[in-house]
Image (tube, one colour):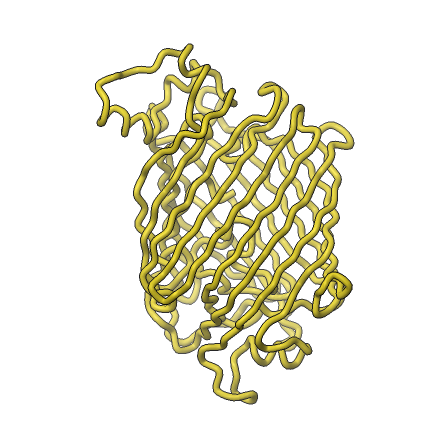
Length: 419
C-alpha cells in the first residue's frame, strides 16, 4: 500500500534511558519541534528529563493500492527498561492496524522484552486480519511482463497482468522465551500457530492454467481454501547490541529450528532452519551515528513440506521490510537467502536528520524448475532519509528509495530502522 504519514506523539513513560542526559540535550527530535510550536516553554532541565520522558511514538497513515483500495491505519512503537538501566536492554513493543475500502483489515502486536540484567528475553507477535498477497511465483530469475511500475511500501501502484493476487484471512501467533546461559548467549524454545482461511485466487482460471498458489497446493497435497502451519521453535541467540531500535554497535545472532507438527494441527510435517545475523560498527567516537551495518537473513527447508503462503522471501522478516527495492513477496522459495549492507550517517548537527545508503541481494530456490539457491541473485540498492522521532527511544521515521532489476523501484516508509 501507499502511505502518507502524519507525526504525533504519545505519553508512555519509561523510568530510565539508554543515553545520558547531556547527550540527549544536544539532540533535537520531532517531538521537540512539535512542542516548540505549540508551547512557549523552551528547554527542559536535565533533572526533569531524568524523571520523566516519553518513549512512545505513533504514525497515523493513509494509502491506496489497486488490490487493497483506500486504507487508513496507525503504526506505533514504545518501550521501557525492566530493570537496572546499566545492565538491562531497552525492551520494545510495536503495534499497527489498518482497514481499507475493499474490506481488508489487519492488526498486529509485537514484543521484544528483556528482564532485569537481561536474564530472560521474550520475543513474539500476534497478527490477525484479511489481506491480499501479490504472487509472482517461486524462485529468483523470474522477470514478469509489465514490471517496472513504481511501488510504495512494497505494493505496486498499478495492477500487473502477470501477478496473481491472493486474498485470504489469517491468524498468527508465536512466542519464544530465551534464558541467558552464559554472558550474552541465550537458549530457549517457543511455539508458533499460523492459520490461513478463505484463500481466494482472484485470477484462477482452471486447474491446468491456474495460479502458482493453486498448482503448488494441489501438487503438494494442501487444501486450496485454507491450511495450518503450527509447531515448535528451538532457539539460540547471541546479543551485544547497545539498543534494539537503533544500535550504534554490537552483534546479534539468532538461530531458530522450527518443526511443523501434525499433532499440533499442521497439515504436514516440516523442519526449517532460520538464521539471522546483524552486525553494527560505529565509525566515529565523536559521532557514533556514523555506522556501518550488515544484515544476513536466511531460511532453509530441511525436511517435509510447507504450504504456499508460508514460503519465505521478500518481506518475510519480523517487520516485513526485508528487500527494499522490491514488492512484498516478489521473490520466495522453500530456501531463501538475503544480505544487506547499509551506511548510516548524521546530516544535521542536532541529529534531527540523518541519512542512509544501502545495497542488498536476495536469492530463492524452486525445486520444480531446478532453480537452486544462489543460481540467480537479485540485487537492489538505494538511499534514505531519517527523521529522529523520539530521541529517548532512538525511534526514527524512515523514508527510503530503492531500485532493483527488472525495472523495479519504490518508496519505503517505516518507523525505526529496517534492521
